[in-house]
Image 1: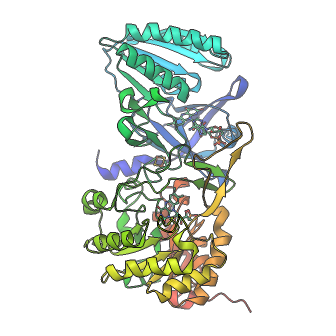
Image 2: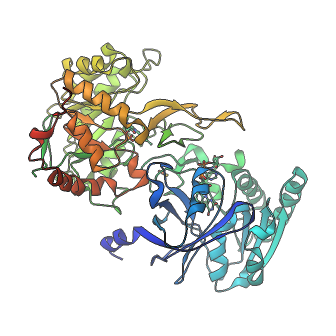
Image 3: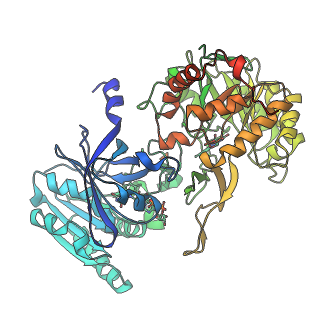
Length: 262
Length: 304
Ligand SMILES: Cc1cc2nc3c(=O)[nH]c(=O)nc-3n(C[C@H](O)[C@H](O)[C@H](O)COP(=O)(O)OP(=O)(O)OC[C@H]3O[C@@H](n4cnc5c(N)ncnc54)[C@H](O)[C@@H]3O)c2cc1C
Ligand SMILES: Cc1cc2nc3c(=O)[nH]c(=O)nc-3n(C[C@H](O)[C@H](O)[C@H](O)COP(=O)(O)O)c2cc1C
Ligand code: FES
């Protein structure tokens, strides 16, 4: 692709094809698909046309799925922007720019353990749907809300999944134990890919280090620009380095960061 | 209409620049537009040595704007000159280095180093940073300290123009503007961010790791316009206006109250193509409004 073509494909004004609202604040948005080549873990910045000055900033969202039919986004309402996004209706136009950042690295033949905490499931949806050898994938899913909010029934038809509710400290201990056992199993030729809240990723990083697993984590820090110009998304790296989550990540190898010291 | 403007020794092909800290080191946004079409770019604030910046939350959205506490993180002037400057089209678009330092000697050393680089067209001095020698008081909040910082840079900047970037967090911004004009500034730019804060009543914690940060975006435009208007009436050097510009209309408002050029800041987070689209939109808007030259329009606000 030439630089000229990249310019043409980065920034888009896309039409909303369909919206879907699930229980407890979970939503799907399906947009007219841009012709991007993308990797799971990459994200986009989204800003609906009618936001004028408020909300001011665009919002970063994982590419949950992208194929010839639609660009799909899956999100949970946590504040003003994600709430306002629920007002979108089919036919509306949104600006998006992407695919941004560095996604997960894996090869189809590798055994891969996916670890998702809550909304951390989003980048794995397309990965699971399109993986040529789903038998090489396994997912542990820690969640707070009811399972019906997530597309887990669909994903379980393709790959082996383990869902654990994570509401109380006791639940958390159980989740940690389950992850530890699985991470040990993938510490040889396997890869571990994780996405979820910061404490979840810290736990995964520690378990990976203790068990010698090769792990990648997706860092969802708040972002203003998404393309490296504001320095708002810094994450502390190992050895005193600082990384920018939007361009150096959002996916990092666990050793690059110092998450297990948090 | 002819868009060219002269800015303290620089010739800009149009009055649109990017604001420091919102356009990285100049190369990152290349997917959104061609820097050669801009009037100029101002890069992220540089210091002599690289700095890690602030830990913890660095950005928070606020009504019609945002707070940031980046903490002046940067790769250091040397690395910018070696790694980024050669990749920028400085022969075609002026590259202005925004600089900050902890004392006057450091300002002088930094100015001497950067002014010596062929690719750097001018220096913009961020005086909102703390003076470590003067117990952390901010250069930009005291006319004497601002003037001394200006003089230190001016003396070492050779034939490169020096623009002083003024902070709005002062009792009277015109006093600082006059002080730096007397100290030899070739131009002033304003405004930098306003001090601000956001808190979370559930966690009982500040949203920013550094507690207090800088407010930018459309929310601050009236404050910025007022400051530019007042400074334009007090000084004879060119004024660069910024603060909350999101459209060509906003840019013209700053020019109407007297600004020679404008900078696009945090609005380019909401629309990364904005600095580029603003250039052509500004030209169209001048046609629409029948503006025949900048001289005929600039500063011609009628208050009687
Ligand atoms: C690379 C990346 C991919 C993401 N992918 C998804 C996704 O696929 N689905 C999804 O639902 N969310 C995703 N997020 C998180 C999403 O961007 C935030 O939830 C959203 O920006 C919050 O906006 P708001 O206006 O609703 O909340 P705000 O009013 O801005 O904040 C409300 C609360 O959410 C917290 N918050 C703000 N930004 C983030 C963030 N980036 N991550 C976690 N918490 C945050 C704030 O600290 C605050 O407590 C992703 C974030 C990143 C950086
Ligand atoms: C994330 C961010 C980083 C900034 N960094 C700098 C900086 O390094 N030096 C400086 O002089 N101003 C810096 N500024 C201030 C802007 O250049 C500008 O003065 C201010 O944001 C107001 O303009 P705006 O409302 O258009 O953003 C920064 C602003 C933001 C939002
Ligand atoms: S979000 Fe702006 S630099 Fe990463």
